[in-house]
Image (tube, rainbow, N blue to C red; front, side, top):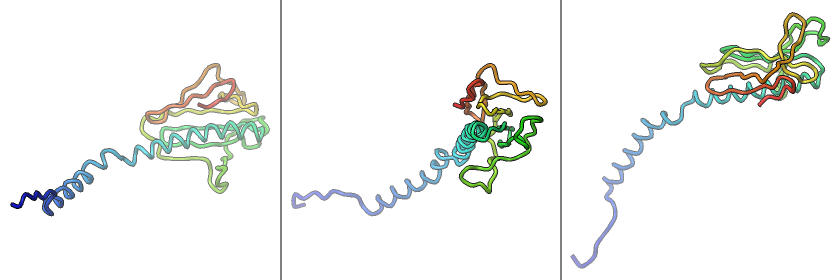
Amino acid sequence: MNGRFESGFTLVELITVIVLIGVLAVVAGPRFFSASTFEDRFFFDDALHGARYARQFAVAKGCFTQFNLTTSSFSLNRDNDCNSSALNFSAAISRPEDTSATFAATNAPSGTVAGSIVFDPAGRAGQVSGSNFTAFASTQTYTIGDRAFLVDGETGFVR
């Protein structure tokens, strides 16, 4: 030795570390990033946007609208004739960004609880019995998977 020390890694050591990192990425990576987590969040955000849009649609068009949430999907509908004489929610509402698609979605996450909200032309949230609209007296909670949003009855505010 001439007093020189060489430092560094051998090629075998570098390849071993790269292989170990690759194996960890393949085995542990999917546990951190599950597609269902993103799909559940997307469904919740879409439903929340749908409830807000239903209220805006009711106020802007002067027509009763319904946000209908089932254990597997949600949809937006309006009163068929928009005259509130016999509330019949059979006309689907189109998405504002794509008028050829109805405002609906399927594949709700497990744990979704069915419920329905009707918005009147004043923007209040409530329910319909026969052809009578009754605004909610309190804030209602709607659960989608492990998330929830609230709807105030008198103002129709969705949060």
